[in-house]
Length: 204
Image (cartoon, rainbow, N blue to C red; front, side, top):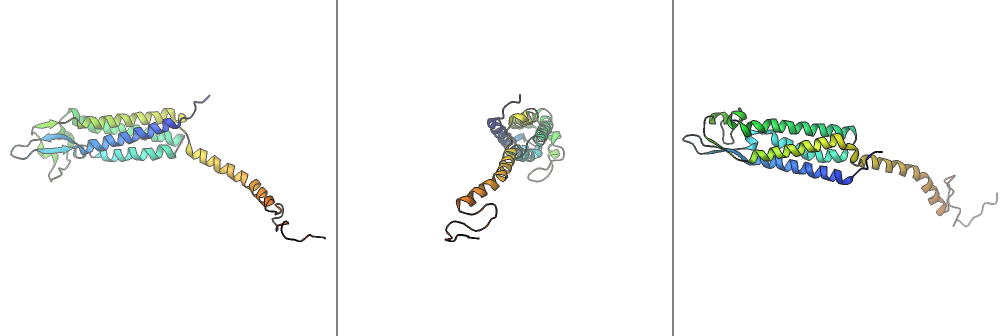
């Protein structure tokens, strides 16, 4: 016996995806590392500079909300695989910045005011907890992806319901039309004029 479908589960999926998108976008906007180059003003390196893909993954999480609602079955499971894969990519991008040399991890990333992050190599750097927010967003994204992959049968299928409703309506239409014709005095078998209210009786 299959488990009953739960609209609440789908609402929870959508809410979790929105939360993941907010965490990823918020982390990208925050300062991850403050670098103090000798003889220069301190430089704040945000998540958008050190891990520019975060904004794209935040948008992917938002798109996942529409996808989770619009599709079902195999397509919804494939969406789960995509979201889980995106979470892995986020972790791979963030962890080197979180635990290693953030300047080296940024590679050839450009600074907002010009120049490259690599030019700041060897300068004292102070980390902030902001990358942890991106990791949290990736964990939520992975959890949603795994849930869609393994528990898709628990989620409602709106497209299937609407399609069934359309088919039922199509089946009912002929009978409803016939009853409407009878109510209005028309012969539903011929589609002819009304026998009521014409004031004429056919004697032939």
